[in-house]
Image (cartoon, rainbow, N blue to C red; front, side, top):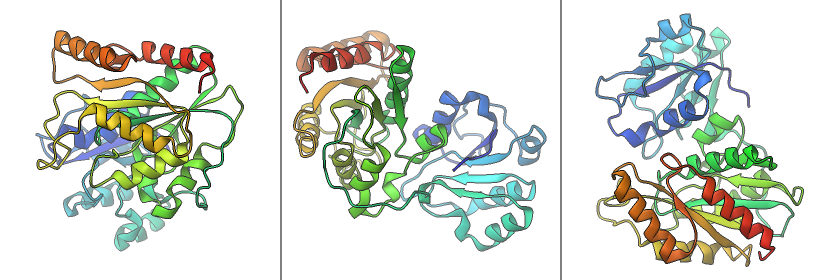
Length: 340
């Protein structure tokens, strides 16, 4: 799947800053591919791009309008569809990571055929899949896991891949969600895979490789999130990770969209993830923590990270504020010990 660039990032009328994480991720990692943003509401989070109409974006050369938001259930709000129709009318492709398919909206699908443009339903594009088998395979694999959804698992994996490549190490980011696929240009949206095939899909995404090659795998959901734990479990088993990086958001009051569920204890989350990962790799190790500390000042952030390091004996960082270097160094040091 090759989605034509550059992009117009459609942000709709959402108000929650986390709801635009897909567009924010694309902008952070592929800024050269973004010509502007389209907001339907002045109170929608601003990514700092030019606010453009569809016509203005087309005039600037945008080839694809990307639905850059995520919501619970992955539905396309009715009030967004006119913008999709307008983009198609201007000869633009449209890409969406929603569960609801663009191609299922009959008049939009017909208009796209008439204009000779494509509708990319990213979540629903993957090769034929097999069930997982859990057999050991060569290559090195590190997986980002989390205490909850939307805590930086994709950003952590991308930052780690970039750092490993900077050091001359053979590494590939393996995208398992719609945002990661938009950035990487390939991958499998694991949360759209039939449950029986999740682990097999991840095995296919991270196949046997050279012994010195690293797959840096984007995690999804959380084992302690009652809505998304099933996706997380299958991903962990299929990834067969040698190392885990635990992701967390400092100061989050409860599980995302679930005020009745507190964020789980980090120690319990670490132990559960290691226990589940041992099903397919008994030698799995915790390599570090990646924490979103944006809600705290720098002193509070450093204090929290230092406490994590004291408790768990591995490095902890905020990759946006402080970089991922020390987690990468510890990961490579663990691997050099050969004790996996």
